[in-house]
Length: 429
Image 1: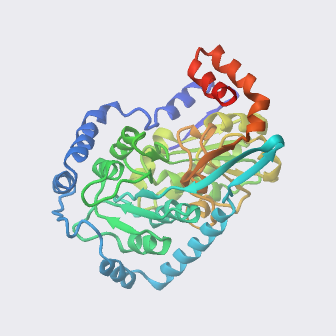
Image 2 (image 1 turned 30 degrees about the vertical axis):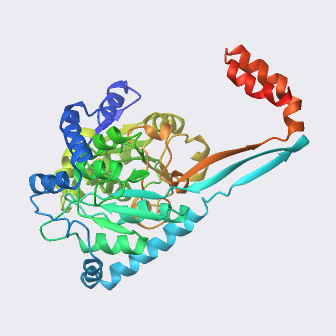
């Protein structure tokens, strides 16, 4: 049963510490294993990929079938229901519409004496997307990672996903095709990340890697950062709910469970001013869990990282949430918009009793790739800007340089960099 903590009587330092221990930022215990895999792929390319596929995935691949064929993708459409295909296409449309509003344009400004300054916006050329192949299937993750890259103008998107003896899940292949993925490869784990970062005889080297994965994938992404860019080190999923006495305990419990089912490390937190609601949600969580297919995962998640925190005021609730900085935050209160200004740290905010978190996971349009493990303090959701690089532009005429040359020379000499100063001086000798 989920723990109820009365913050009016109990210090919350232990609660915060427990949540912080869920982070995947510290992965020292898997470092040496991942380092060996990454170095082997870097050195031996395709040969290492085929060996690891046999060793870790128990699938014998060849250089012929490591890439998913157009025929396989076409066949996947016959295995996906028309209803699901329609929903995938509707979600794609919503996601494209939302992300298209994030696009930025290059700009230039002119100043006196012939000074021109500006910034060029250029999309990355090649992006790699990792799609997990574990106990759950996530075609939604394909859409969320690929579409903003395509909206940004990325020329080529490469998708990797672990091989299966029965083949890649059809919904994954259909989502990839609908989103605009250019090439799909049957590789997973740390070896897939290394292949994307360094390239092999078969896979091109990418500029950036995005997409969730297990601890080995997370460590590999951390290890190859610098050879290419990455989105972030994704931690376990999490949801926090601020609720008052207008909230429906059945709705709140269902939304908490929607994230608890992801992972035994997932956290589901309710912060409320209502003792009555706290007890009702506690009962509802137990009642609803019995009927859910992933109840074993849910029970472990709820027991270890779930909590209902009773607070004296909504101001205190907001304070706690800003400290947690949750991935998902629901404001199940009478006037949710009145709290919006006070929330400084959250990946995505869901306003009102009918803005259930799964709307954001699948359909509404905003990206579901969100900062976790408290990183909403400084990270943003995945967006079009993550697939754009910016280049500064500087142009001075002789007259413009004459007006500032003494300032630049003085600055350079103050730093002891004579060659810098000389590069300005020689133009006026």
